[in-house]
Image (cartoon, rainbow, N blue to C red; front, side, top):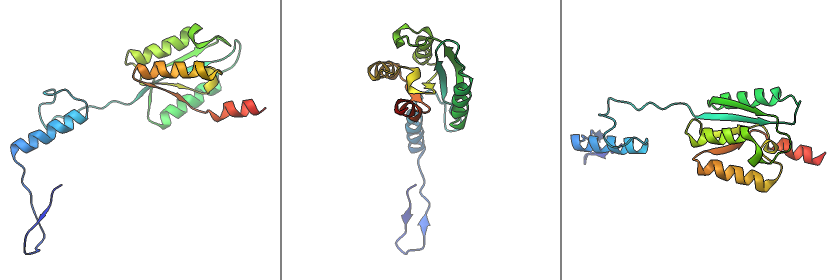
Length: 161
């Protein structure tokens, strides 16, 4: 807020904004919030901001139990206030990322705008090969989202064993 002190040092005087200035400020705020010009009728109308949405993607070998990572990812998303739009569990084993329908479905959720991120428990659930992992992350970023790994430290512990 702009404050102006009068010349006698008696404190702040109130700044009055013109109707045009108020309208210009509202238009700037609407633009910063991503509202197209003219969508909001005025200062009384507030833009509704929804929760951030993510899709959880889990992959394991056939006959493995991934209920624990599912609970951890769901709790992690809730801790950040993220809405989970879908949980995709896949038992593809060591297939490369291009050969997994579930991963393709998770990426499509981001491309369609249904989710803003793909959340997974461990980096190896996308791919243990850094180039393949990076390729999937780039594809999600090109779609306007991001790939988030809940616990990348676990992969380092597995490698140390």
